[in-house]
Length: 240
Image 1 (tube, rainbow, N blue to C red):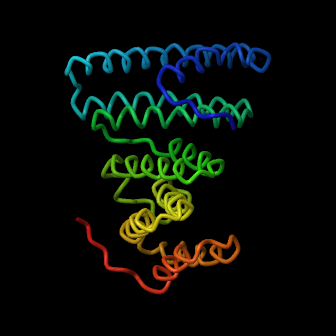
Image 2: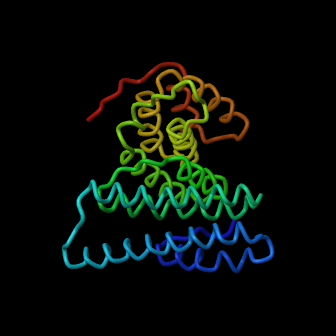
């Protein structure tokens, strides 16, 4: 996967060329559907850019406005992702999922709440699979932390605990994996404690799998020791 987009402008430029890039792969109905979606997405970008400009003059939207505007952007992205699935274009779907991280950062910037987590989790997983540098992994971990903190209360209540593929679960499992790969004890403790807090019935399985990875991938001794601590007992957790 190429280097992910990092700004609203890059995302807008990418999507403005999407119809042309897919020219030979679209029939008339799909072209019309894509063009209609891209018009709506362009309007979203214009609104977001206007809000960013107003913020430079200390004119800020409130958190509920940020939540709803951000959610509208995510709904448009989900429709684009669904269209890429229908066209059987997984590489384009993944590129569009990366844009969800830009929308997430925009929402968080204005203290909004994230209502649509699935594309964000997929985008984070894609990055985790390609990143090797420890500092880059720490940056990803911090972003995943901000995303988790900014989810709606409904998502945090984890009402679909029976579903192993629910985005809330995957976010914390993947965050734990990213934390482990940083080899940073403080980051690992933060991720593991929240794993115990938010997924108490599934944390044990994560630590058991983590112990297998310690041996298979020859992790440093201090990382193995910390994983063993969490595997053997539940450390005390402070919420403050």
